[in-house]
Amino acid sequence: MGAPTAPDEHRYRSRDDYVGHMMPARWLARVEAEHAYASSFGSDGAISGFCSICAQQARFRFAPGAGDDPPNWRESLHCDRCGLFSRIRFSLDQLLRRGPLAGQRIYITEQTTAVYAWLKRSGAIVRGSEYVTDPARRASLDAYVREITGGADAALDIEDVTRLSFADSSHDAVLSFDVLEHVPDFRTALREFRRVLVPGGTLIFTVPFDVQRDTTLVRARIGADGAIEHLVEPEYHGDPTTSEGCLAFYTYGWDLLDELRGAGFDEAYVESQWAPALGYLGAQLTLVARAGEPT
Image 1 (cartoon, one colour):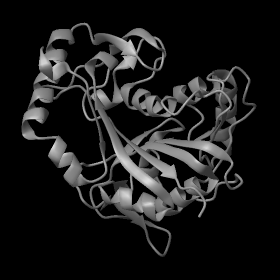
Image 2: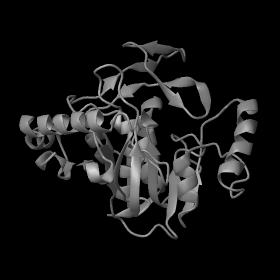
Image 3: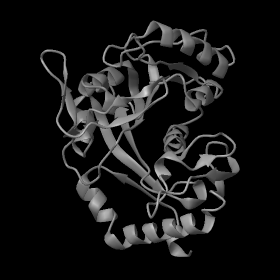
């Protein structure tokens, strides 16, 4: 496939930065290369490459798109070794670049997923949580958490990300993957993430992020009477703790970087990589923020 398959990694600090880098020729080359991958490997449903999380050769599985639509690269390309898909692998890659995980104190805003189980085996000191209010559902998830962690976790931990129970400066890293769009008061959650991070600590997270939007789209909000008010067509995302799905309150735009700085992070950017050899296709966008040193 030639030049379009060459890896391309970039750090964006603004929409102008993104537009300047993602020129039409670059974007078209990616689209053409991805179409060729989907057409060439569609019957097999996998491409070969190197998993940076497993640190070895792997095959990345994907499901063909519907009709003429491309595959959902962001939510697929599962590594046949670690089982993690591209959005999660790329985010963990950002974490691993910051040094060995052994001994790092990490909080992740999930506890019932494959990425949480992987982190528990990594040598890091990991805490995870879910926000589950139904007692019966919580009891069933207690057993599931014990199973996926081999008994390392006795039960499900419950945390509200707008009121974390952790002490100040108690974690080296905070991870959150497609959670903040479901938190009506996400600004308070960002301040809580900053509070529990040590100076120099890192927040790594993903959210639905529209690179064409300067400002975040508010999809729904909580009214004064506590009722949900839908401002646009409701959008529900998959939730590992329930079959009902979870309402998305936001589709984020570039102003999210300003929100991070306003929450006390001294550096915030969007990290992106397009690298077929690593199983990164489509729009791999991970947000990274660094907690500032004390003044």
